[in-house]
Figure 1 (cartoon, protein in one colour):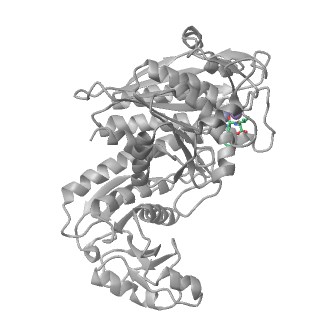
Figure 2 (tube, rainbow, N blue to C red):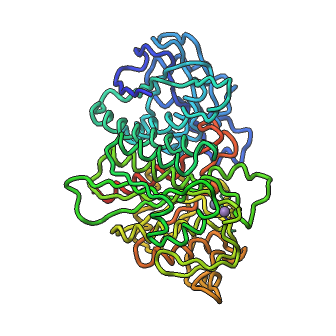
Figure 3 (cartoon, helix red, strand yellow):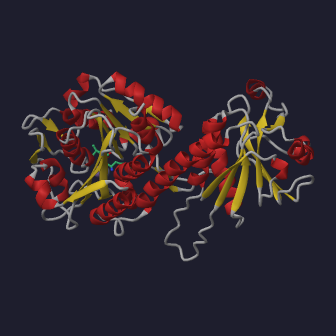
Length: 505
Ligand code: BES
Ligand code: MN
Ligand code: ZN
């Protein structure tokens, strides 16, 4: 998708479709009490021609003003555009760049489903122009993705050209820079979704490593991939304990971004869970819904895609990306409940449930990141069903062993417009995962399962400031929304990239 900034008068634009946002200025509290209260709809632009073209429709009383309501007018009078799409952003009072991102995605999905190829969206003046530009570009790219790769009737409908219509007093160069950066981020988010979308027979650990290597070559990153021999040689006993059950060779993917001029420290470590299929192993999962476990590499895909974005955005900070990729399979050489494994750090682990495999591969991934010199760690993983019980599919779970790193991440997360919620790591939870035969167990019972998993990981992050993101409930959209297709969401990529950039000042 090509992005252009225009500071022309909206009515003068020769667009295939001009898009204007409608906001409801009725007091939302008033509306709650009085269900008959009429929406007060106004366009988020002061262009008189666009207002005139929409006036009758807005005054008709036919519109609800609910977010994402759309109306398409052909040959709007007094304008050069062929079409005018009105799309509701919901309540004017609450309207933020979070909503604008989704409105842009919904506009893209509405128009591309009609076979249209380009649109010009009028940036709502309520939101500062650079922030609006970023939100529109990121949202439009997210909306442009569809996962129906293997359908013979795939139409591959896409918007090829996006124009952002900014106020005539805005500095075009600043907005072009914002749009360019947002484009890198949006495309990287879609790259993560592309990897996650592939089924396990087409996204083995080897294929994931090949995709990472290819990406690294394209953007100028160092990339090394280690196989079973090296994993065993490095004594990654936790990672190997999962990999040993599969006939597909595992891959330890290591990507390095070391820009000239970056200080020696900090070094940010991005560690991703790359289980390309999770059967549960000998503690096998029920058949119902198991097909979805192809997305158990979403954390790893997100780290690969984040490295891409970082390499292209070039912040002056060192970053190392590590993905522990393997299948989790039952077989004659699979590990069994009760087995004791020695992690790379030397800690012994009693395996209670072979389906708690994500924390095993991450244990060695986190330790290895420290060994490579990482001073700050962040991991992302579809780690537990329990986080879905706790937070549903709306918020990802965030854990941190240090308040300063949490605050930094939280700020990045707010800017990225992704929903996440912090969960606790009290020392007392450790009682849940103590073992009588080894240092720790890999599961801690049913209650607080997402926390038990995070406590386990903390044993390997140790004192290094660390963030853990449990994206099990948010990495896959169970249903389509106006702004995004059903399927992989690309969650966490934008927050990760903002987080890394925050270190570069
Ligand atoms: N990959 C799963 C977690 C998961 C569940 C991801 C649902 C996406 C959607 C993970 O490896 C797992 O199986 N976790 C177990 C842990 C349990 C055995 C302690 C779980 O959540 O049931
Ligand atoms: Mn599992
Ligand atoms: Zn898993």
